[in-house]
Length: 265
Image (cartoon, rainbow, N blue to C red; front, side):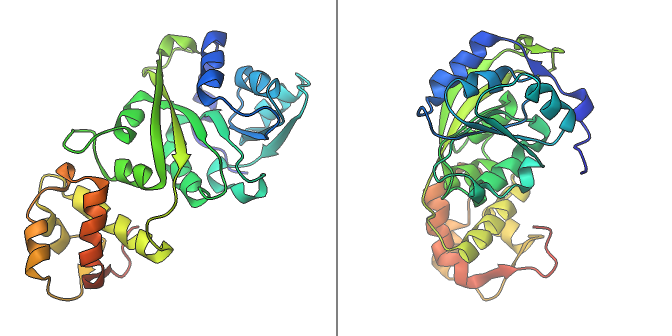
């Protein structure tokens, strides 16, 4: 099994107070199966096992062996890449509580979104910079396509900051704990794909007006002339548009757009 290139350079949470703070914030129901991604040396795994049955998804067999030796009750191990796991195999509503490997945050969010109708609340510790992007409001520098993707699929709850000094070796960044509460889909699966192609287009040309981005998009092509109402709405930058505004815009644009052949989505 191919391992992620930074496996050997990972850092480990060592502050037990932070572990308890994560549990209080996540507030998992006793007895429900919990999913953890990346066990490391097991500091969080030990705390989760005290709450209820836990499945650890870990790509590095060395850490599975290490934590298995702790003989924690109710803990099972899945040697797999968490970005490729079928989360539908777990009981409906299973929460995820994890200190995730930061270099796979984006593909993990995509995987979680795919199974959002099956998963329970997702409490994760991520790099603070990424958390800022996911929590960003329209009109701010951090607001972008990933913000919209996450807010479409989840309600994002801000938790608390975790200092880099809580890890060893000490990394170069601080962390943030957030919870993602899955939401019902607002669009069909095919329309979702086109909607995110549209939003990626708008932020691909971030400092340009939406109409300019759309006409030059590497992802989307216009299939017919746009009505005047669309042209007026597109005469702004996307960074100031809310998710609800972009969904409303999509409803008027969807029949005038299609993916470009071979687009890099």
